[in-house]
Image (cartoon, rainbow, N blue to C red; front, side):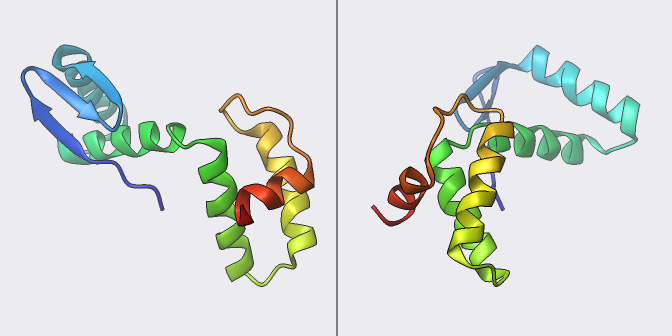
Length: 108
């Protein structure tokens, strides 16, 4: 599970590498509270988790998914195919990767 940490400092809400002006982040938190009924703390955590999710690199995603899929008992050949398919639907702009490149990312 990906975690992000919030740090309020000098008028900014820092979420991982993202710097949002306090007014922007406050507006977003308030919007989520109104739309979902979440508390301010829960809305801020949700924003943090979403931004953290989208901050993941392709290499980090590959290693994390490989570990998760291995724990579920899948064979590596199946895992490589699944990761290959999932990479195409992910939000990061990943270069097309072969199954060999995926294996090299996992094992070095």
